[in-house]
Image (cartoon, rainbow, N blue to C red; front, side):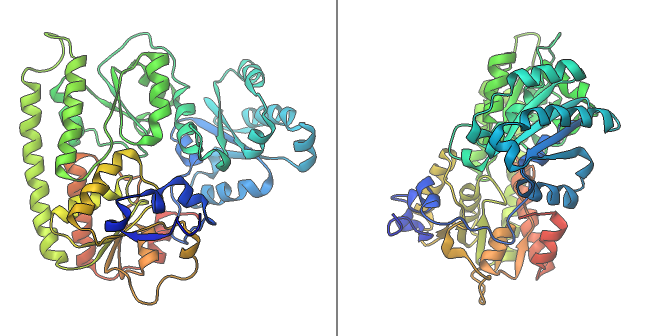
Length: 454
């Protein structure tokens, strides 16, 4: 297996079988390496998007250490409590009663009193196969607040509900069937929401939909729950796919998948799918503003023209600089690379450990345009040790690429940024232009300022 699966290949060779570097077996074939620049949003921080909620993490002491450090570094330590369980409680199953006692203590001591509670279980609970359904119902009755169950279990990374996807589903399970519906649109799977006056919000408005809804816009738990009255939901990132299925089946909210992209043609494909989705929802004479599709297309043509202007500026500023891109900067590193190669930018390396299906067409087209780009799996054991003495790139997009290449300039983009549509692509180009103008960057300081926790 180790002879077939490898850490790095040129696109010309990789395109025939991407799984050699980017497949599940490629990651499992060796030890998993984490660079000092790896980190960012974890499932706990995602769950805390729910306003007025509190988290109780149930785990052995060592398992909670990473989350506790992250809570301190990122400023949310007052919103999370830990119930540390020992070997005896695990073996004898006594921690189930400990959880109910821990929840009681949280609800009695935390001020202001939480409006919702989420219990996080570590992987030991999956190994034991505990069913918490009855206990959760008892606790909800006792404390009068909804309680959700989430899991931080790395052993489930290969199943249909890994931690990053399950936590979004758990969050939206707090929503209940609404008393009335409106024209709001939920943004699913996105750590940061598009601005209320963003390009996406403008397009939705042309079709008579809005406002955009996201937990970050909810001042309290009741407003979060009112999201259930939305007319539709947009799935902008794959992390929200289980939540999308839940609200579609349980609440009857239609969902449109429209993942973030950077290549201009891909962006228009996403928008075309969104147009069809919105037109299908519209009620003639009641929704929409007449000529919605035409107005949106005209507006997006202007946005595309602006992106092309930024491409020209980036091309003149970057010249022949070798660029490295990683998957911690965006969910679509191959699509971003495709956009930049089409724009005349010298993309030299891509760091990614997976190839989602929505990225496969971009990889194949990129291989036809620039087959010498090297694709590297940053998790491969061969990537261990200090960063290179001689830079492997002149500029890196993403902290992990910055470390792996020792590039003198790192563009501090991270995957939680909201970069949807032509507006998002223009912001990315502006970040490249700005970083090139500022010159050499301090990666260690950037990682610290961003609050990454390995």
